[in-house]
Image (tube, rainbow, N blue to C red; front, side):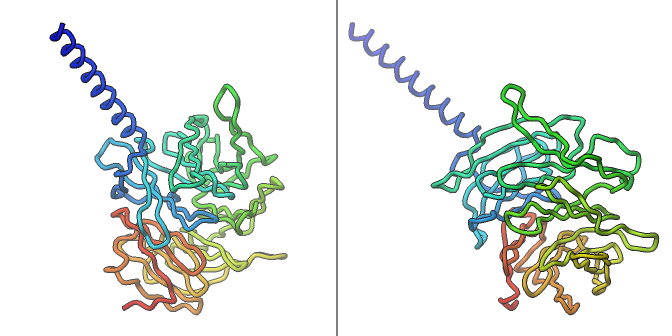
Length: 350
């Protein structure tokens, strides 16, 4: 009788240990384990480093710990301190965007898998609310948001040459039993636009966005379901590499390499030359005093003032930048090491 009792206790202990092991496995697979940290980036990522619209938070897609493992989405504060990470998918991250309210973070990978996370109200934590596949016939260029609504800029047409690409803007809508559907909001697609390379909001909680390809710039209004072409490249003009917006002006990095500007307003929109640059740029953000951009080789970041003076940022303090984001007079640089560095033009380099 005594031996039977011991055997029974042993079985209960084994069951308890098994349940505990299963629990730890589930927690680890959910990507919510407190010890999870950002992993270095394997290569350049575009459109996956975003400042929260209302809180002092930055979201970034970061690399898998080992080849073939899941990528991660990480949260940092404005001092660059890592706050939280969780796993996403094994496919390369393509775009992330916060909703205008900041309650949701949308994440898209190269296989058109869309993840929607909600930001916890009382903790720095992302909860996975939805994971769906967008229509495989939809080639997505950009994610943009207004309120809690998500839109994608993309095309269903396959062109031989990227400069012949067209686009429409699609509202992503939840269906009760069939995941999501993407419905075009423009009456006619925009033809011969070229592949859209970036989308920049005109203001916070604004329905207007600047969209651009290597040859054209557009002003889109999500609330009105309209798109207006504001610039089209002509024969001798340089290619558009990237752009940003602020104070009524679109600042454009070109292939020359140079910096140009395009004032927005009523009447003609004329792209005018600002200053030459020491090398071709990639990624650009604006502060009150200057523009910060990444050199094409992605080994250094540069600062260009409004009057055309350009200098490289200290590579010891801002090593090997992968992506840029900005908030007011602060610029955040995400390194290939998955660390965030903060730069301000008000703090002179030592």
